[in-house]
Image 1: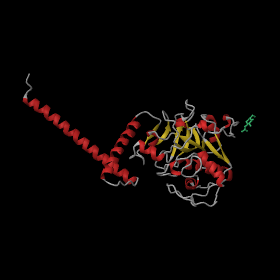
Image 2 (image 1 turned 90 degrees about the vertical axis):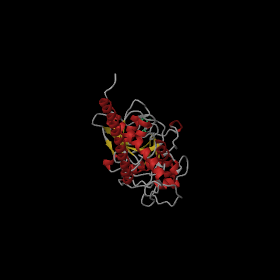
Image 3 (image 1 turned 45 degrees about the horizontal axis):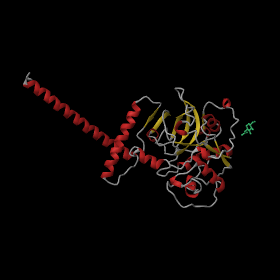
Length: 339
Ligand SMILES: *[C@@H]1O[C@H](CO)[C@@H](O)[C@H](O)[C@H]1NC(C)=O
């Protein structure tokens, strides 16, 4: 059957029109994404060395935005955001923001655990060390893999406040520059326990203002200008969230996590749940715990990626999960300094 000419024309012109509409939409989507990338660059002060690099970064940005939006469209207890890491591939993110300096928990020499006989029933339902003035504001490690120093310092700032009544901003840079023993290698990685050992040997740490952070390895500017010190450190028994709870109820605690997943890279708020790796590569600090509105138990943690990441720099992760290693392995190697 021959299709009447007029109808054929109508069908053809419709196809053309549809294609034109699609093309126009793609073009305006592209323009909107370019504008979004530009706004993001301005917001985070990002400058690229040339047009080629900018085009490459735009494609990564676009793919990350698509990942974030599709994750947020799903049903999760937490959400992601287009933060300062939005033009980095996950591979690049792992390389710069986290470090590979952690040893497996089986290698740790068991220490005493002073909170072992604390009864879980006597612990408060909610702990937030910020409300007790034992947590300094969020810091930013920048392009230096020294999360281990920030984690150790945050735990130390906590115990110093609890034992002396004074909240003293302590120097991460002193650890980065001067603590070169054990696994500790400045921006290339380290261990919180090794940091605590160094601090004891060093007679304490100086203040952040006397030894400011540079986000780079530097020559140790020695001299014992200690502003605060610790007596030692203890490890929380591994893979035991109840033991971790006993410790965190008493002081901020350093924890190692697998911070390499894309959901960690772009975490923006809520209680992180679901699957996560356990290749420990990032040090953060547990500063409390509690229960969300929907009943989900969580750990409250302080990160060192500035305030544009997470909940103004903080993070909540599901607590008491079936995997004994905890969310992202957080119960595998916790430790705390002693006063
Ligand atoms: C816990 O209690 C046991 C048994 O009474 C005791 O041997 C141990 O020293 C206590 N631990 C601490 C850290 O006080």
